[in-house]
Length: 201
Ligand SMILES: Cc1cc2nc3c(=O)[nH]c(=O)nc-3n(C[C@H](O)[C@H](O)[C@H](O)COP(=O)(O)O)c2cc1C
Image (tube, rainbow, N blue to C red; front, side, top):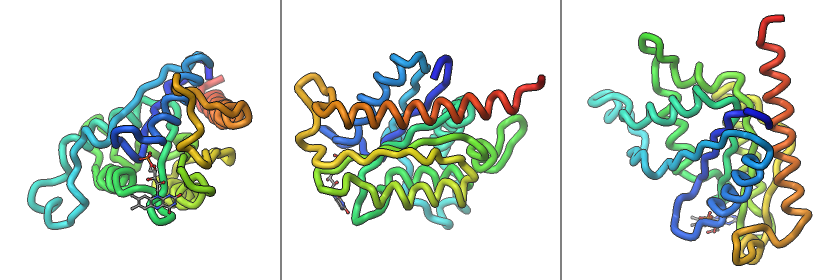
């Protein structure tokens, strides 16, 4: 992950979010692996629920540009989301739906151009026995199909997440910690391979 610009986004920003805690673990690991980590708080963007009439009347909300800029400069993304009834959260999906509506303007790329061929990895956490596995699989499909992102095959769902962290915020189970590192290493390897393939010889 050396010198990789990694954008970390969570699908929950509630106080005490288990997914944010997992994102914290992954961010610390990525920093240890020499990545430059940037966090973006989707809640801070205060995006309304997507509505075509709203878009027609006032355009795409200006804060969507923060997501666009963050995605554009990143070499890779890490998305960490809970599942709500088996799906990624509205916070995550709504932000990406707005991003998809941004058109190119001057030097600024369209939302879908910024995401195209960008590597991304997925993590999730849940107090339940599936750890958000179903949401990750839908999110994988959504990002590949609509956003042309390259989703790494390796993913990790933290089950029983309510008991998974110690007082310092680390994962108690070394196998879980190794799984997070494995996802990050896979993402780093993919991003490096893509970068090498794109750079002129
Ligand atoms: C509307 C709603 C639906 C949920 N559906 C699921 C679910 O399908 N599977 C699951 O494992 N947990 C489900 N949960 C429980 C969440 O995994 C749990 O609230 C989790 O802590 C949310 O993530 P966070 O701690 O990062 O906010 C649901 C929670 C809510 C509020």
